[in-house]
Image 1 (cartoon, rainbow, N blue to C red):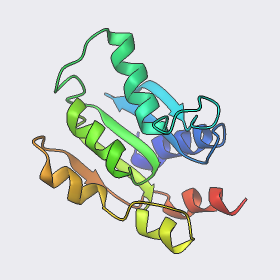
Image 2: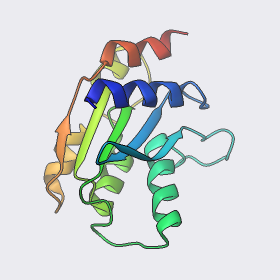
Image 3: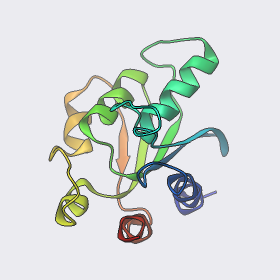
Image 4: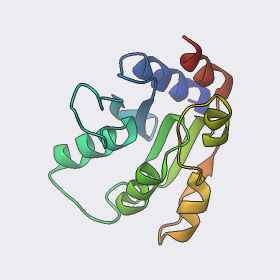
Length: 145
């Protein structure tokens, strides 16, 4: 499987959410958790797609450790915000693959904190690979509807 395949699944998840953000957690070509933004439904400002996926995984594993997600890749339709990127550091995700960038969202007048995921990850204590721009144009289209 390739990055585009998993991002297509994240795009489908994004269509289910309060806002068009979707995420998929993958390891060894297998999906472990899918999720989407539920901030309005849950009345929870932290219920971003990435946070929902990480919460679901760690709750299901009944385990919390700083490297529980070693070897896992998080696919997300938009570049993780600082909160979500920090959660990836805390959980030990090995790779973050995203579609649209924070800057592209800002350029569309979508409120964002202008700190890149890569900048935040580099300040952390985990070795996380960041792969940007996968199907970014499709991810941005979700915001035009």
